Length: 134
Image (cartoon, helix red, strand yellow):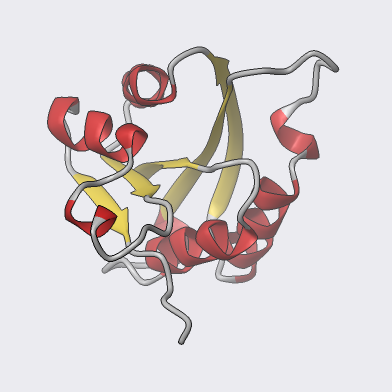
């Protein structure tokens, strides 16, 4: 069994889909993978759940269609720190993140969450690029 923690943002279904597709494309059999779909809430006055997020639902659709088992994980606080702690909690073999689309000058630096995870995780990190539309 191979466990992947996928850090999913709130507002970009194309990023969530790209992350799900990257996990599906990992070597090995999809039915041997468990994807832990994780969202870290920063501001949640209505008390939303990770199950309610469109980005999480879309990623789950892609993963389940390929035979990947999915679970949900949610946390609150600093996204980078909480993703690393979530990976520890589920004993993930890999963390999958995706940065935000940036200007040409800004592309030299990852987003702060992605950068925190890449620099501080004690396990492999898959940084999925944002699709570029011209």
